[in-house]
Length: 154
Image 1 (tube, helix red, strand yellow):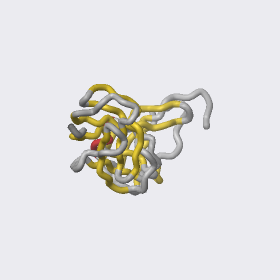
Image 2: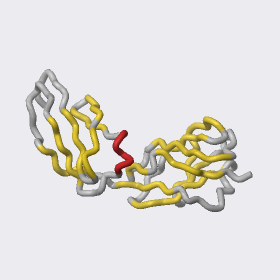
Image 3: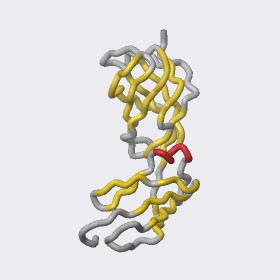
Image 4: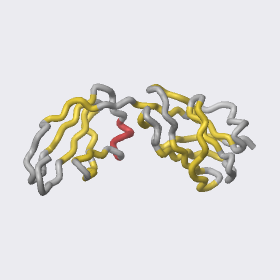
């Protein structure tokens, strides 16, 4: 039977690629030829978990929506897919405030010039130097992170 894809989690990621996507479906076969297709670009599956679950890393792609299909032999792909993956070109431009005390605990509102999918709410992270902090979804154009305390300014 041909493999089918019923869900992609997350269903969005950076246009620069590299997003690890869990594909749920059926009839996946554990082989070196297990391949994921994002639009017209094929990439090898990075992990077979079960016949219903695999992991793939998204390739670089222009921003927009592509269909996702899977092949067990790197040649024959599922004939039809209703599962889409959206490539975002998120670039954050506005930080409010852009400075804060080294004691941290400053609520920073990040405004995007592009839409932030609500489905991203559990994956929002902010980097303050070498520290990565869990952020929160505010609305389709804003996220919020609270700055951590640091020893030196920078």
